[in-house]
Length: 585
Image (tube, rainbow, N blue to C red; front, side, top):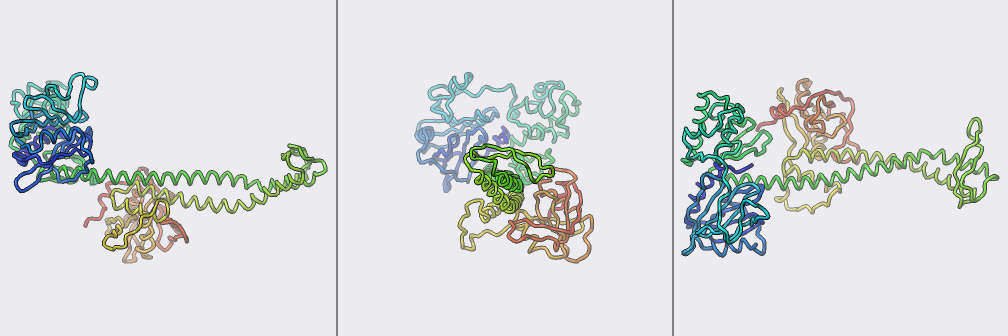
């Protein structure tokens, strides 16, 4: 999510109100492209964060903490030399570009800290009062960029400007004159491509607030519609000029952050709710704290997926090896037969023979057959070799079949864990799966803290409410599936599971003992299909039976059961139905 000129204007207003007159107390460089300033105002310290990183360049006041290196980088040391004990002066956003200039006064010297928010070209530059560069967090030479250099000793120049107008100064006549009167640009692109500091989201919002379709070409707008577009544009930038910002984060139906903006975006129909903040500082802290958490969750999740994936590979490798051994073991009778033929033809065999043609006394026509021999062994030793292979193969069949069954059960278990990981969204869900893998010996088990206050409460099952009023419970992981099926459910409850695929155990609670309506069963089946490997499929078979017909084999891994006396229903997983039935407190 890019930081546009309008959002930067909101940040500039806030920084001006909070930082002007503040004394620069401390400067750190926690990462290569990031800086933190501790600024002293009467009675309080204010922390300023600045990033020239390619992914999330930004500047804002923050309450978040950052880990600093033991040895400050050279740029950090230079900033300390010139700026420590300096006073924050004017803060500007030149010509509504994505640039902020902070003036810092120290004794009789004036410095400018220039923050360019431009994606991978973002930078932080310190200049003296005459505009000469003292240094930049990213030095740019001709070898890097032939059009613009940034290194100590040369004069600072703004980045080459695009052919766009400043939206804060544009008149009605200039607005209509600037936009090409043709069908080459949609209405929102006409706004975005011709005026500075406007990203795609805000351009669409301007068109929406004008009562127009953002996809409609500008050339297709009537004079009346063009006037409406100007009014929408003018209304937004009147709010910017007056500083009437409403820093907002949009949350979609999956509870994911889908945008941040200086104003709520009314045009986005995927938004479930808007979070409006008092200031940009709290907005960015919320946004990036959640982003860090998600990155951390994603990192743990990916590492666990890798562990499970490796165990699945090992499992399948073992099974393939055992299948080959089983095929070999099925030749037991053949080995015995060859041993008997060697014994019966001992008189014509000698040591050193690699093969021999003998009469097959076991075939109806007693035809001749070739048998392979080890030339290093005597005929008697060759016979004993085949009898040993026979005995080994005979004994191996039972063992191999038993091991193959174990590996098949383990594969089913690991596939279910993989599904649980893929569908897990919260830190708590990941934690429970990680604990389960530790308990089952797949990862190193952490020492549990005995202190009850530090022990985390297990998550409850997912809960849904059928249109008939029945409660529907869904296991989030294998241990929850066990608890749901064997402890929470009673004999009158109905149990559901996707057929022959990994999936959650689903329970329809039946407190009255009355027959559960078909409609309720179908809704629960849709939920079971959604929380399974069949989520993206159609016509998914889901089995259902009374809970008394669900059994857990002795010694089976978490979540593994067998069931009987079941019926099957075919459904299509539907996210909208899932959202509609989700339990609301």
